[in-house]
Length: 606
Image 1 (cartoon, one colour):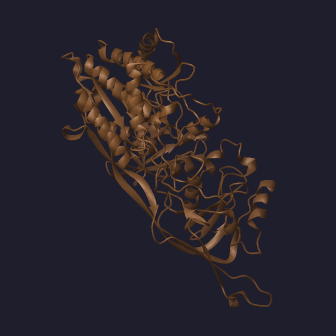
Image 2 (cartoon, helix red, strand yellow):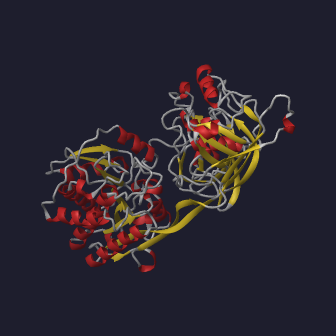
Image 3 (cartoon, rainbow, N blue to C red):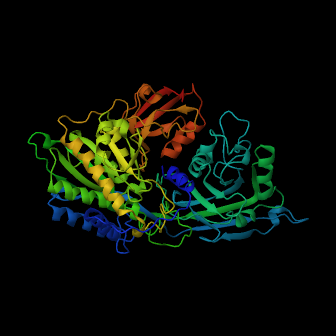
């Protein structure tokens, strides 16, 4: 989802946003709130940080001042959940190569070995999804590290990698880059899974030739899971090339040959071994959703709830999602993403506190959105109010950059009632409505959709400051946001004052595009939970009349094995599906209520 948003950002032209002073009381209130949320004091609001704690206290104090009742854990405003907030390198971390280089007239066993170290942070560093541990073994070059199903190309064919450390090129061969079925195979995690399943002890990724061939990526946790099951390193091209002995094809020549001939070129590095020590420590912390409620006025309808939400976390000093041009730590202020939405929740809390609706309005700010919708997923899984009584959820994410009066509204297909409600809400404004029916997407409303709760997501669009330190308070259109909040308020009141609860549209709980099918020949038919689970991949939902449903898979199952492949995360699952074809019969091992269960199904074409 983050990749999709980043791609869209790259397509935008770099336009300057003029600073805009608020001219109405509502716009001034939003301005004041965004300035605090996007201040140095809040330091980018990274989950479980001092900065986001200041933001949380600010929101709680505002709820108290408005008379909003607490609706979190144990009579408080806070709804706590645990999450992995970061990863650090700890001792030991080292790489030592031992090489015997042939000398004329000297038996190789008589040659004194040369020890060559790689320097951490200079020559190499572990990826945030690497396992910790120590491995020692042979070294095998495996081309691009892919094994496409049904093709006469396999980088692992003819080489024994069991117990070995494999070196692979990142990305795909040039001739494969435009093949949609091969694209998923080019991901780091797909290659790591394949190497693990082939029996490799560790995998070293080296950049292809180019301007960035000797640049190491930003170190940080992988937002879609840390359980890769294999030690994984990234290495600069220059030190990597130096460990290839003269008796084999050089790294440069091997890359050229694979791209030219479209044939694999994999081989052992003779008389070469390596010892790798990798030490990673994951930092666990407690994050908080902030939850309040404004009781409805109708003695019967006030037992039902309309949720108004926005995430208040951001990237702190810059994490793995940062698009900053430098790796140096810098405050990612997140004024639009999502200081704007959070300020919107505070403004709507004020309006509904002063003039309550018939149904109870729940105002909620989520943490952990940038790490995979963690806060909203947690609340939906363990709600502090009866989930079956939630009649609608309205989400605001990045509503501060109104341009050309265009407001995007997603999720309109989750209830037939939304069209008339929105038409009425937009009436009398100069806003142009752009709609999408899909109730899924990269924000917190997507956590409610699988539970068959009608949702809407308000959004003013991406911009070139997205996930950069330059997303600052002076670039927001505050009068524009105040107009948007008028529309959102009317929409929420319509849902909260309706005589009957909004009906959820049949089938809208099924995403338009499912990650288990994109780019592949087959689809399993599940809605995956992208958050990390040490036991496997949790299933959020099962689509009807699909291989998953026919196998008897249920919501909440945890997939631990598909065919012969151990499943630890979404990457493992997509690796298997990328090599499968329609008609393949596979066994699926799931954990259900903590007990293993083996299912069988026939994979179908997309």
